[in-house]
Image 1 (cartoon, rainbow, N blue to C red):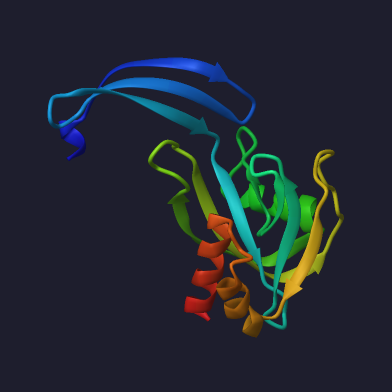
Image 2 (image 1 turned 60 degrees about the horizontal axis):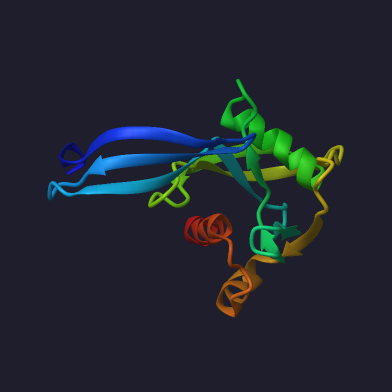
Length: 176
């Protein structure tokens, strides 16, 4: 099916620190022409920190895009030349002040493939060891420990509305 699509022209509309905005003119499989607005996003990582007792550590932080606080797992973008594993370790220290003895890669997924190329590599972080808390200057984060048996209740309550966090918690419940 992808072979039936043709990108005829691409134009960069905006270039930023984290993302770019591109306008593509495409030929659809039907032969019709269409315009697609594409967000080019730097690769990212997300980590589900799991304590020795099986509880998970979530963070509560304000997200300006949705103008509210949200519960989510630690995450962040890769720095140039940084591997996903290195970024995961760095982000754990920056956001929750822990290092992980084990960092198991669970997979990579697209966040919103209808308009963005953003890919997130998801890790399970266990064997947590307190480390330095080195937050970015614009991060104001509170940490919340959620016992494993309370995760289904939290999911059912609708309090988790972040896609990467929903994916990580579902993966965790399915794997354990």
